[in-house]
Image 1: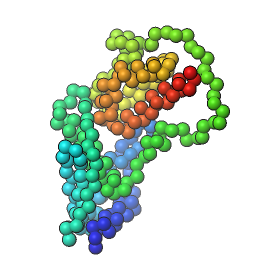
Image 2: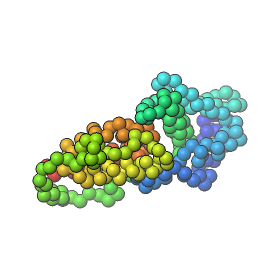
Image 3: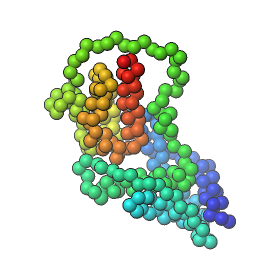
Image 4: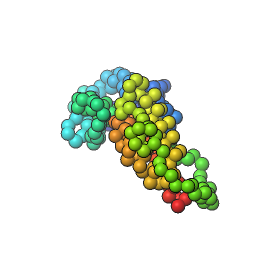
Length: 230
């Protein structure tokens, strides 16, 4: 039996299992698979079918090599590496964050595990009306709201790294961004909120790339609303 056929059998066996998702994105309101949700089952299936796996990394790529232990044939799944720049973290901690994410994505690809669609999470489910909505009445110009009261206009008063549960930290960032965007009066205000808090958003990206993409979609939609009304 070829390694390709064994891998397909492994995928089918895993699909038939009632796997439960333990990861949760509270910002977009959906759950996702973490490594611990499917990797133990996958390892047992591989053992039963005579498959072995090895994950490796170099400066450019992460690789998952799946080998047929009977005849030595192999399949390699590759993914380009990205970077994590977590504020206050040691280089080895940033490296560990990158490798953990890459392992998860390699196994999702290898086992054809379906994840939540980021586009579905950020786009409205109903079609847009044909008629363009009336532009809101112009607001009197005023200086941007000082969100922190101390560190400068549009600076969100949120720590650059989670102090406890990461979901609580992300929820605080979600609420702070909504408050800032509610006080924005122009597309330029939206851009200033993003620029003033770029360090914070970089930290969010390193912790949860799905949450980061959802958050950036909110900023894009807010900016588009002001541009359409102009």
